Length: 408
Picture 1 (cartoon, rainbow, N blue to C red):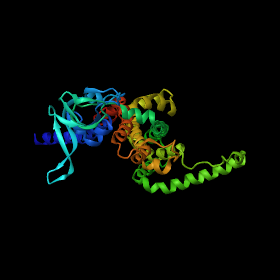
Picture 2: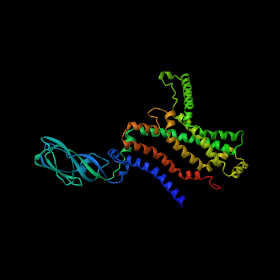
Picture 3: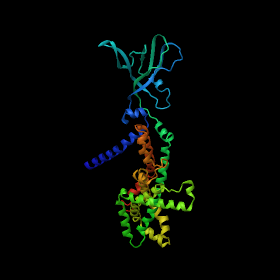
Picture 4: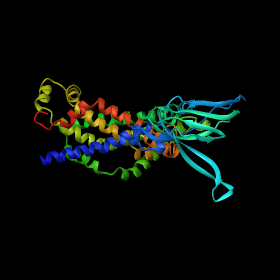
């Protein structure tokens, strides 16, 4: 009983640790810039007292009046298409100069929070407002009042909008370009290692050749090589290839005329190769362990019927290995999509070709304290992996459970 309770507690804690940051990102990205800066995400779902500034009236055309009536919410929402403010008006901050009680020849500036229903002096007029936002500004004689900006505190109802996503996706071309670049990198970097690993796993599982076990041990041992340790030789290798390709380009074409001989050492292709190299050892290990557990009799029957290794692989092994292939595809997709360090050192550095993690890191300086825009970009980067995981969830679960029970 204690063990079960502890397990449930740990599971609930893990869920809490993962869900709360996600809720914070989403809720902040759907709030206005003012709310995101002035109130924590936990206040987004309940009425919160926030300050706003509104103008009492528009510039008059010279007509003189005894009173002006209006509504604070209508004034606040006049030029807005989204994030329309609603709630209850609590108070207005009024700044006035009064005679200094210590020195009648001087005045001093005082600030006062005036609650709803209390009359206050605003530019030689009496200004009074209600909790629903209605206000009346009256004068002792006909006048043409100039607009007055007042700071109002409102117990504001929760409000959400998609302005941050519209700004990030449509007003800023860097984010769409980064999304396209990430797809260009991630899709081949997922398909290539899975394809190669599937062939290699079948060979290690069912084909006999000299040194098979030792070669498998070497491949598995590559999983312990730190990624950072491999950067220097990889960069040197790509630089050498780029120099050779540049020389070949000069020899075969007239690129000197257009100054286009230089071949970049950092490109999408370099990312494909690097991610394939880093992902292959684990992919081969996982797929080999899955394939070797398939019924031996099934493969022997296919061999008796005259099927070749290629036919067995394409018609039997691949269909039966879909759960394992899907499981590793999810892992590989998530690793490549969220990768920052490999893309930073190996990937292209052109502004239009940056992948999403690098673009997100650079937005920390671009958007600065605009939390709603930063969080919107972060949510966009999370949506794609979540959709991939949900779409392949059933295969993922089958792949995890494969081999856990007899006949699995």
